[in-house]
Amino acid sequence: MREPITERGAQRLREELRVLKSEKRPAVIAAISEARAHGDLKENAEYHAAREQQGFIEGRIQELESKLGSAQIIDVTQLPKSDKVVFGATVTLEDVNSGEELCYQIVGEDEADIKSGLLSIGSPMARALIGKHEGDAVDVQAPGGTRELEIVSVEYK
Image (cartoon, rainbow, N blue to C red; front, side, top):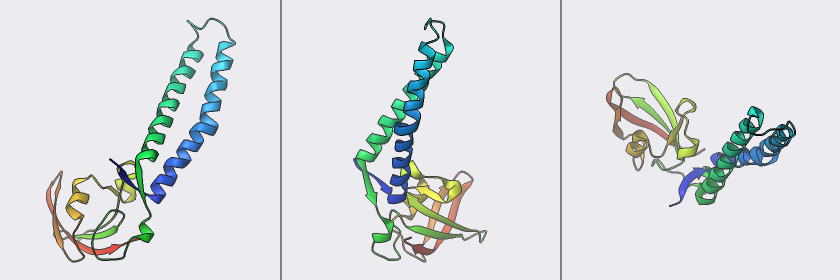
């Protein structure tokens, strides 16, 4: 199944992959080579630490390549403008009880960061918002209980 991701999120993953392949991988290979030169590998902590780091780097490279290969990259700016909440939309919400205003962009799992206002498509709040329109009220299950939120605006930026 293809996982949706915004163009910005895909670019961030591509940049991380580039750094791993062109900077971190060569550095760990050099560290392994240097540690080998120190002799007995069985008792060489530097060698074992470098090999372990190499394993993490290679695993992350494979993970990123797999994610990018199966990603469905969506350019939010090219989506048809409407008041309907869909993947990539930036939604401004108002808590009906407290009047607190919240703003989130609905993004893919790998780029979600609630502190930055990036809400995962798989989160309960995003699932409650998808398909709704400006002006709709939505009940969202939160750790502190159910919150009633009103959709103030829907933007595609």
